[in-house]
Amino acid sequence: MLNKVKQSLRITHSELDGEISNLIDAAMMDLSISGIVKFSENDPLILRAVTLYAKANFGLSNDESEKFLQGYTSLKIHLALCGDYNHDDV
Image (cartoon, rainbow, N blue to C red):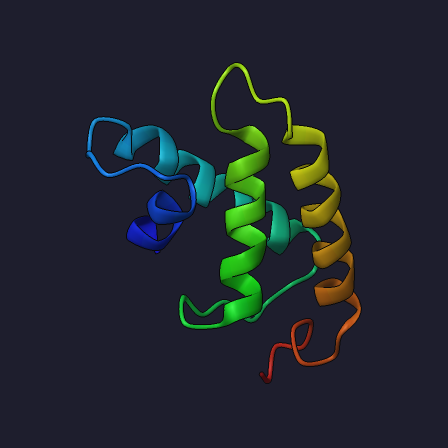
């Protein structure tokens, strides 16, 4: 997942891997707190949510962070309400 998120952030080097990994972990924890129990790195919706979270929170000067945060929040709500993502027997 790290490489996919780095690609979406347009990062090609490994100097910021620690910061990006922390953002991925934070996104996954936030999704979990919201009641989402289905996590697969190959799931396009989970990957998109994590990517939006990273884009919203990456860097100090990010003029589009609010737009990405709104997208993340909307997707998180949809996933949390969807039975395919909020049941342990998934």
